[in-house]
Length: 393
Image 1 (cartoon, rainbow, N blue to C red):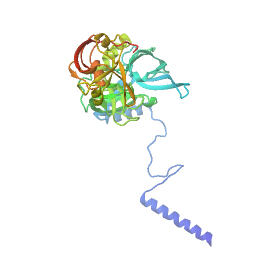
Image 2: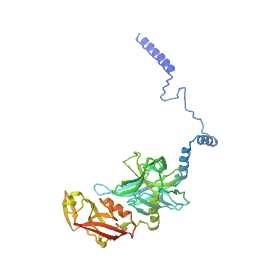
Image 3: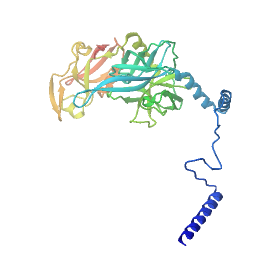
Image 4: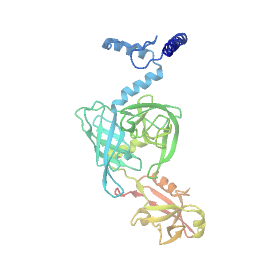
């Protein structure tokens, strides 16, 4: 009796499920062949080359103008974008050497194998290899020159063929809202990835990992992730208008920064010719003075950049500036004092050490800079000729 009731219950349930699913059009399927009333249209055999070409042509005919532009820019520029891998040595807690690998992007600027990338991509590298599109294996790269201040570097590879390269554009007349495209190798794994966006802002100032200011940066919302560094930022004509350099945070947040190509060109040219960049040098280290310290040292002003270190025989030393001659405790910090307080450079007020560095960077080697200081309560103007910073420093 119990078996008869069980069979009857199963039969009623089966009828109910069939009726319900057939009325509602629901078809669940797990595992074997599907009995659903719809299915993906998949050919049982691969399409012929002619059929595939026809499908591509049909798809291209349906593309919008902006889509066509992105595709064309990628086709033209992508072969010139390279993947860069580096090997360096780090040290663990016990000072044991540990090999470290890094990855980044770069782009070819001529058919002779010269590549532009970021300086931080190859920093401390003991070996650099470059993978080009269509290359069968990575190629060893020579470091022609690098400049950490601008975060730019030039590499050279030797290939058995003439290499494709990108066209450098003009970044002096960019507009916020202008379309941009970024190509790179995010995370060192996804070679020649294209992302698109717009210029979000211009003239941004950011700090790099060493605390140095990088000025006049292009801000974009085109996705830039780790590994994209050194890749090109392109305009809709396929011209490089920036070099992708930095992101905010540890992952893509829609805020990326690129070095303007018009600024980078000068640095790249000098790296190609000299292997390094000649930068003007004053030869002092300064400290942004707090108001209470300025008052304690009896300066007539409450802001400026105090000289806390001066290099012997530097332009500042030879020009007559004074460095510290004693120390004092400021909180828990020992502060060198007795040096001049810089309050203006070329008649422009100075309130911080960053402004000192920025003012010097805007000069050229051989320029004469007017330095306005307070030496105690006495105000003085001293003209100093800027020399080239020693390469080893």
